[in-house]
Image (tube, rainbow, N blue to C red; front, side, top):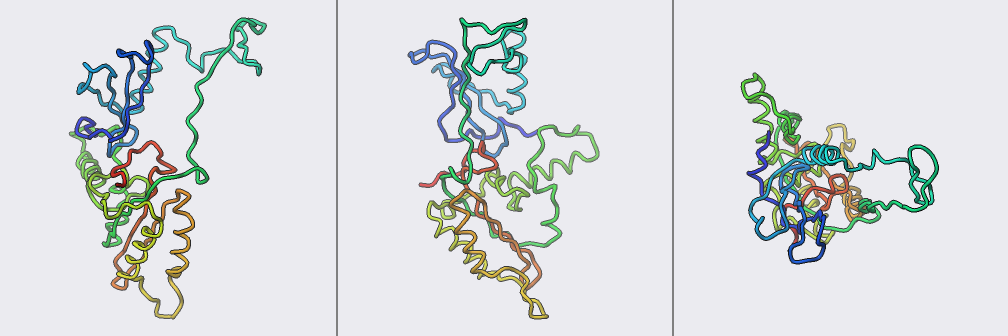
Length: 275
């Protein structure tokens, strides 16, 4: 299992989960901050000054299980346990009519990130140039699973190798958004808020290592013009761009420009904010 206590917390404001004395100097809140290079894991702290530096590290699954069991053991009503609600907002009792003296409220959901609402910046990763055999090792291109095999198992070393390769290596992940989990791969000179700079970087990588040409004269890949136009069209809408082709030496070239925040991994922390 990945050691969450070795991972830094993201440089973002902590989210507060408050339960009393709201707005006072001794506000009683739990706080969560996403962990860098971890999927769905958090530093859990206390808003009181005495609690600084004493954070717990927990996965989202652990927090979910804790929240459910804590609520049920303390006889707190969970949403799934509540009786049906009338369209007017008046809750119905289990045994009959709607009550007129009470009403329910729900916490509004966080707006879902879509290609119509996306706004952010871009990180470029690569160029990766290597053998097809290395690229096709898909186990090295996935984040380590939370549940790890027993250290004495025959395949435990393979799990550790794959986890280490994913966390620190430059082999492109299967899902482009998972680049944001990798440590030390984002760079200031490959982080942009101008889509023109991002597409120019892609164009330069293509020209530096062009694709192989077929001997029969037919075109093996889409033209550079078409690829660049597509990138300029989709990047401002939060869609990642990945170019992969065989070079003239039959090596594989892979370059990616990843949107941050990421449409499909919106909870992942930014590894390097622009600035």
